[in-house]
Picture 1: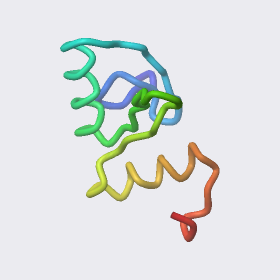
Picture 2: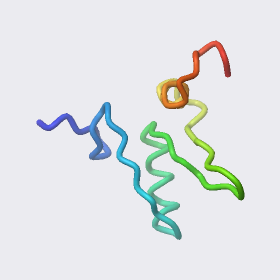
Picture 3: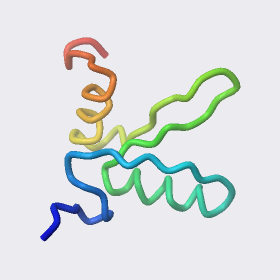
Length: 72
């Protein structure tokens, strides 16, 4: 086993991919369902998105941002 999770990504390693169009939307939706985080472009910066009902996904957002869990 190579340590990959169900999405084919290493469990402790982020593998960013840039995709757009319908296939990008499908990949982003699948990533969110899997508990991953997704960077979404806005007019000025990228925002991070996660499934707000998934505690592990929320924890990933805090970890990526280096933010303590008591500081939303």
